[in-house]
Length: 151
Image (cartoon, rainbow, N blue to C red; front, top):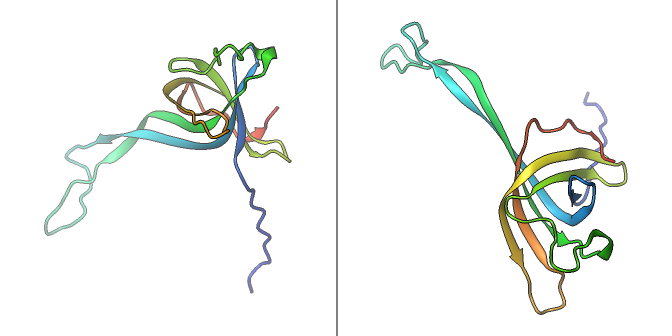
């Protein structure tokens, strides 16, 4: 007999981009985390093979260096208290930023204070009464924070 389960999905992705001084400089409307680890093959004469007829060596591997990136899309914060109304938004290629990546705004859960460098940056503007949008790739600096409470 199967167990009764309840699906608790969350709609939407939320978050913010901050300076190291904790000033919110952009609102995130979507984000995507990519994580990878390099594998280092350790091929030697004792490595296993995948077939007796036409053997191909299948070496054991060590886990090498890892890397995380976050692709974000959002709106500039043009709030005068952050001194961004003069066009200096604080988010640009090469900027060091902190991200709050929310899974659920209601519960306040996600990834808090993800530090990284803006490594790819694009601005989009139109004359149709839309807010100025941007996309950026953030190269995460150090380990990716554990899932938990976002402050």
